[in-house]
Image (cartoon, rainbow, N blue to C red; front, side, top):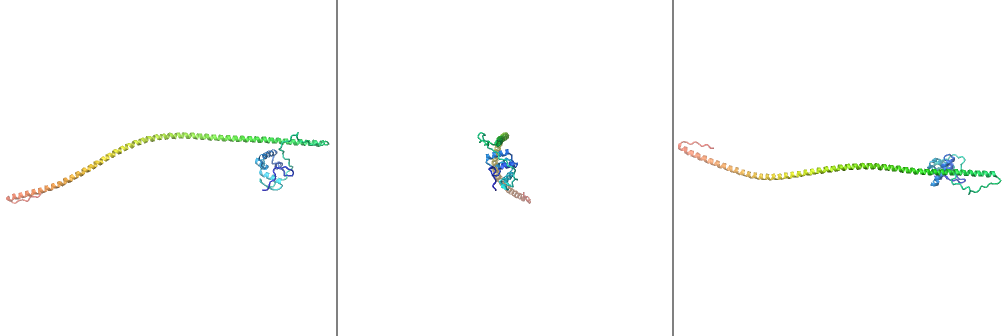
Length: 291
């Protein structure tokens, strides 16, 4: 990047100061230049950067003014520029220093032989003093405006802080309402939980009662079952004994039937023999039918 010309020198033979050049070109006012110079003295920035930051002049205009100072096309930190047409008469840079005490100023030598020249010099001095006083008044007004803007900035900050606090309090109020609603809901849930616990206790007592009844019935059923099993075992033993007795009686019945059949056969044989004997003496005997 090319080195930009000085933005604030006012030595004889040096380029025209940037602020004065911009005033001559109609891009800046005296009051704006004074305010920019004060800001430059506070921050130490280049006057071009201060003018751009304050919004008094745009960057392309500053670049063009620097190219005009340089006398040829120039690439600056604000961009490349060709420069303005040669400006008209350049007004002097405003004086920011307070005027000297007139009592301490050296007397302007006035030739005794030329009262008109002395009067003209005195008038010029008065004009310079008036211009210095005007610049000083503008400077004081600019300082007052700066103080006013600073105070306004403080008020804005306080107002923003107040708004932020109000928003914070509103959020806190909203959170408090939500918390209260949550507390109410918690109380409702605790009531429901307590009712559920009571119901559970009732159901638990009923369940315990039913379990006790079931256990009692089960115990009685088991006792009855055991008694039935014992009775069944006894009956089975009795059945076996009866069966044995029945088998024995059947066996004895068979023996008796055999004995009866044998006795019957013997009796029939004896009867037949007797009949044969009886019929032999009387006539032929008839055969005895077997029974």
